Image 1 (cartoon, helix red, strand yellow):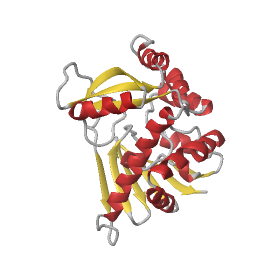
Image 2 (spheres, helix red, strand yellow):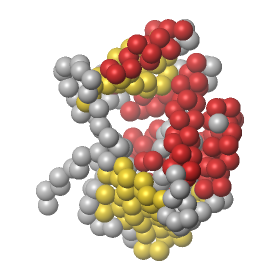
Image 3 (cartoon, rainbow, N blue to C red):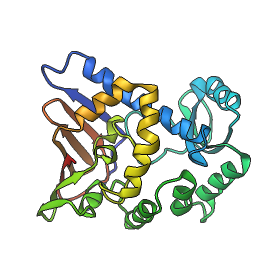
Length: 275
């Protein structure tokens, strides 16, 4: 069967009586807190580097921020701007208002150069193991990601659930998993997440440690109220339903997210309940 990949998209629906705009505003605030924390982890020395997008429409402010903070940024590739969530970039040669540059943000030139090299060192292919190391992700999670990526799966929500000890396997393609609220990746299409990496399991001890000691504290520093909202939201039952490149994520009776994803030819379902 030929698989046609969909253009990136994300749709967020809120249900009555939660559709007054406040819920959507809080989702946006959580996303902003997460992106701010990604930048701050490098600025404060928790990590060697991160990925930082410079948009043509705002390049002067983006680059000014880097210089004023005494950091280094090196470009890796140019992509056209896309709407919604995407697992890949759309390479372009020109720079215009529909372009952004994907690059390495670091505290020094050496680390930035190492990140650039890791993206191009294998005949133009990314060395994901090296990238994960530079980004400061847990070694166990990097190894797991490389394994599933090499099998062709670039959105391993189901595979992580199956690699989690605390689960109930309903069928070959359906699982109930019990995970830490900070490791949830089922809702990241809408920017609802704490850690930026795929954990090797939803109860990975090293991921929980980093989430508690670094990520959630920084997000609270940026927007304490938004983090409170996120933690309450994670108490809801989350259902992830993926088929033919479209994923539907339902959070309790409040939110539904639709997005593009890895094109599975059999319906896969993950039911996530926070521990």
